[in-house]
Image (cartoon, rainbow, N blue to C red; front, top):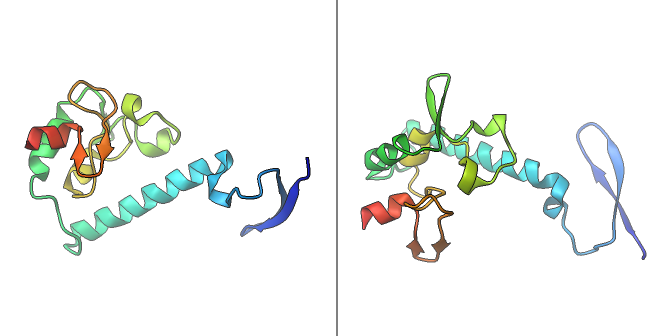
Length: 141
């Protein structure tokens, strides 16, 4: 099997990467999954800060959503802050439905685009187009 070789530059070094899958992108490899998760967490954190400054919208029913989170068995309190599971940086790779997403529950509840990772029976929530089975969406209906 012929290997495609390419150089991937990083801030500190250049290293030779080899892949037998020529259509594989840099961010689709299993080594890069933590990087993708960290990037997503940084974007969510930035959006939360913009929401706190009043530059992004806040979900209308965020207080009800936060109340649902406070009653959830996945909730963890770390240093006085309520999280959905262990804080994200304590456990980057996780099964979101079983261990929570690691987001602070108050900030997650305020984000209109966010959804709870579990349904009312604590199974993985299903998000299909306009239909969602998460705790927050089923409570609103």
